[in-house]
Length: 307
Image 1 (tube, rainbow, N blue to C red):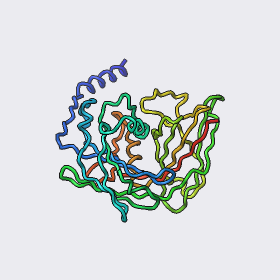
Image 2: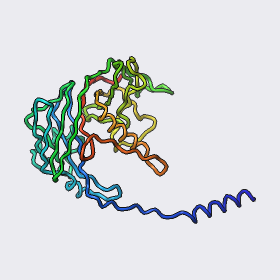
Image 3: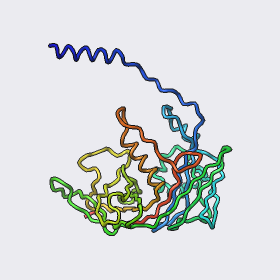
Image 4: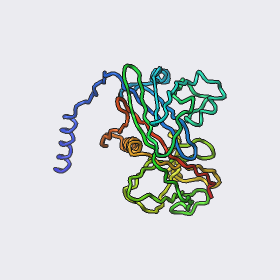
């Protein structure tokens, strides 16, 4: 009885000392957020940059507010040391429907249900195309500010093989586990990211998409490649990460530089450790004067049927 009385008294004292926490409202002006990517490798491309304003963590936002988040009329230049290009702003409402249908898979939206006038900056002349080994500098002048960033496209380390295996546990005729085989270059830091696509539904990055070679420098090794699921997909622990027999899969294997890796690594770690008892992780940015990432991929694409 004495034991339960002590517990009861402790609980009363705990809750009586509890105070309500009301977070302070951040009245500082919004920062500019950069999301800029392009590729070398199997499908080289010119840069695409999305420019938006940040929003306070505790603010409310709806569909009608999204249009106001895009930053317009920026002067944006990309240079690779020998050539330069000015990126032009293009918004969906300025494009014909057939072009929107072509862009939808690239940016992961449904053109029939889109309510946002999505805007991007692109190199219409395609002067700048991703090339292995080159460094690309981004300069943005907007709102009386100058933002700068730099990214380097490393030499690509492709997958040497891909193989499907039976899923662990009870034998299953419809699901398979995928593993990749890669030979890491010794004596240097290498950073990787991958995407998966099912039956031409669009490439998706998995929940944890980046890794480095800190534990396998210079080794030939195999590693699991879980199937990426859309954010809106219902989680099923029995099928999560596995591939369905008969589906056609595309694996996009990427080599990236360190700053690009650290952005995704900290972002994914932060997303996986949310809640009242988790530690806060600041997402690392390589944008001088703003937030976000300016990163390039050296990518190879591998298509295979699940067997």
